[in-house]
Length: 317
Length: 317
Image (cartoon, rainbow over all chains, first blue to last red; front, side, top):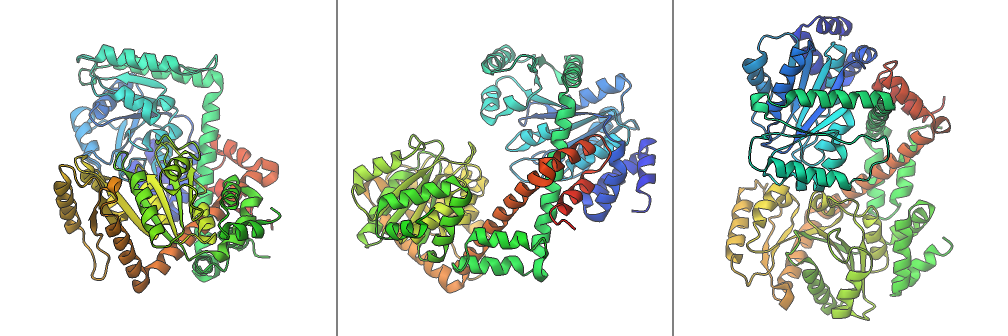
């Protein structure tokens, strides 16, 4: 891309089209992705990355929209990446249109992007980490990643976000579900939304009880539980405060640096393995793996010896 | 292992303890796994590998037991690998004990092994493919892999088995569940068990309807639906016939060879990537990845450039 640097400059100058173009480039992959990331990466590290997940129907987009308003009121620029396979707006810019028109229309300091998810069982889009870095480099102070909490998604989101919010709503048996799905382990802040409904007290009680079972070392973070009625904006300041407290803990405990290094290691390894896998496919004019597979299927060679040959092919003597 | 060859010989001579020892060795991993697989692999390819999956409560172990009896009546040696995280017998040899005591006690031509599953969301044990190869090399004509059908398990099992049976029971909303979970795509034979109960006709009808929606090319296999009452042995011959028909189709269409090569390719690639990943961890006295991660977290380097350095480290100039 001639002008990756120029695009990032323009994005930082609050030009939404430059941001959109950069995210499209990283979604496209290949050489352009690499070029953009080389420009983007040195400019990252300042954004606060917030993950927001929960079952369908708990009010994720309403809460996101309320959080955007709350951060805007504090003078922050806010980027949103919405990944939601089951929502009606998963196709493209529909969420962006909808929320923008409602609350943040024409605000150049809010950028909202929908991304298609990786698979039907949940999980983030492949390009989500890169899109977050683009928004970070473009000077958004807060980046919210919103995704429906099913399958692998909540683990993935905790791998990218500094602070992960898990949303629940009363009377959905969510607390039990949360425990089952391992959501308890990824949540930094619990939000019990629709707290004006019957069953809110019970949901909070149940969550507290489950948290009390958790075996936390001294100095570890205990996830607070915040009640909200996001549709009325109630309790949202409490969520912002909880996120700020978690951030302070992350910094003072050294966990922020640790989490970010951990995240970088996972990202580097995944990219490197994808590179190696592509190399496997290209060995001997793309025939190496097929030939080895035939010999293993015929019992001429065992899979471990075949794998050794494949790996040896990476380093020609 | 001094004596991997001897162990395999003894296993082929119907010595259950030799089979047990071999499977423990492949479960242990490392050098012993490689040594066993080098001896085992050339002797594989004769067993018919059958996957059996379904939701909890549909009667998987009863059906497995009935299938073992049916194959024994036809003079076949039968091996069973049971992977079931939620069953009371997942800890070790309990399934073996239970079924054996009931029906196959003291029969040296039946070998039953329980394996712990990989994760709580289902999926096979890491060593399952190797255990199947051991049983194949030990001369078992039929190897049945039984696993509870949740999450990734049914896809994994279809990747290992020649023929995959999906079990359903009336009135469990299973057909709808099956469609959701993509089970329809992995099933080679549907078994509606507990067919003497109310709702069996409805379950068969629902399945037929869903199968009619599937877009199959001419010459492709259409999964038959077999009704059974496994606890009474009813319909089991029909299952054996359906498996035999599927086997004939696999052979005549060339799909058996294709499936096995595909499976070998996936296995080789997974082993090779694990090897490469281990090498990443060992580079520069185990410090390379940590150092790169720190530079990426600090914005000095982007993740793609870091991955390139990691891959370059595999091939010292």
